Image 1 (cartoon, rainbow, N blue to C red):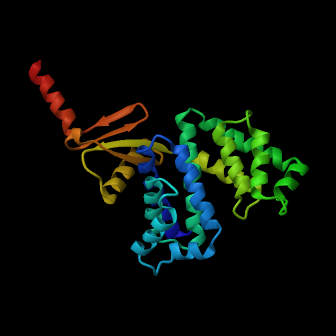
Image 2 (image 1 turned 120 degrees about the horizontal axis):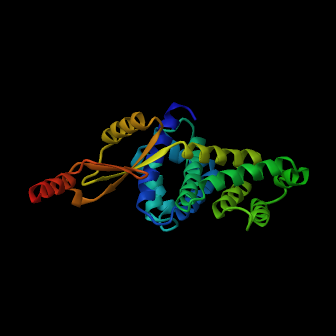
Image 3 (image 1 turned 90 degrees about the vertical axis):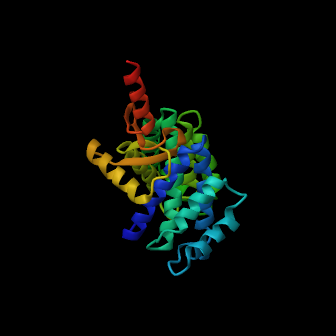
Length: 270
């Protein structure tokens, strides 16, 4: 992706983090994003309409509402609305971004179940297996074979032998390789998994929403502190009163007014 699309994807990943912090089923979000991505892949005119930089954002967002409202959750509709409001270098980048965010959602589901490393390994090994087997390569490259049939083949080969998220990602790559060889589509998901593994996630609790500039400053400060990229996910909790609480793994930085009041009370009681 070129400059504008890279910035738009970064914004989309921030929005995805907010979405996943508010839902209980990240895998479900991933499935819905794959549905949106397949819809975009199937219509060049729709991609152009939603990524057209000369078209006002509200008009594109209204189109998203008409197309996906009632077919996907409100959270996913809002996420896609945020994506189409960004500037994309080419319309194909929008569909690529939706597909990547769908994969990331499934990887978050794997992370929550402690299977992130397994998923990365499953996908890598299966890609190597296909690359080294002429019959499998031919089966996945066969243009006469439907995507659904290739997905079913993948599920038969992996079911019970790989993590559920691995099976779903591989099946999706088989059904919707998006102009790539199947092995290359798998490599793309492996790269996303590796990128996530190198990135930390900060859960930020605040009393009021943080604007983009505040989030960017916080992200930069945490990245400098930890020496690697940090994804900032903001959760609102009026009980913190003011300030923010940042949790990365087991480490907590609590700068909320509620914490200071508690400290003051303990000091007075002592």
